[in-house]
Length: 177
Image (cartoon, rainbow, N blue to C red; front, top):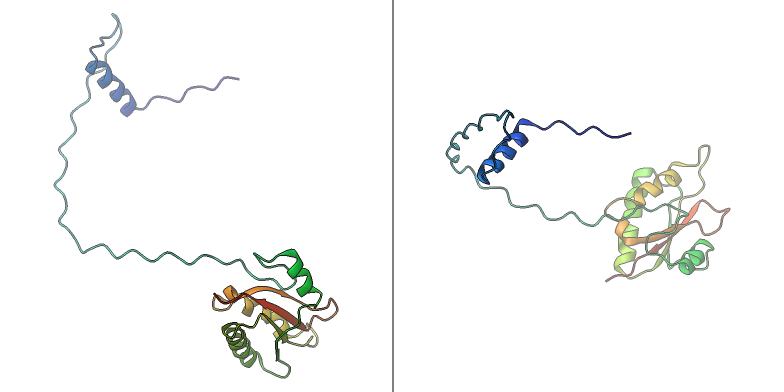
């Protein structure tokens, strides 16, 4: 089934007739020739200069993909991920959050990760415990804390060292540059 051509707008028709008149083409006898388009009104004078334009914003930092406990991080090779997941990479430091309230644990976790990265530590363990009932608030909140913009670029991957032990998380930190 053939498509119908779209109708020609008045602006397109005026442009076509201006082109024909410019090239000395006349209409065939018996054809209607529309009147030439009216001249455009003069352009208004330019507006006075206002306040200077704001300085351009610096480019946004590159977005780092989110961290998910149990999923390999971006840029992590398969062998290192397998070793981290199986608990073969031993943590150099451990943070035990047992008995802490969420506010205390939050601050301790962020400063622990920043300090470890600054000292060149590659693997750390964070023990949240399994919690009771619904799985514990610290265990549920830890993935959110790891994805905060202040610490996310420091972490390469996160995994539970053994499948049955979901109360501890091993983090592989990026190398300092």
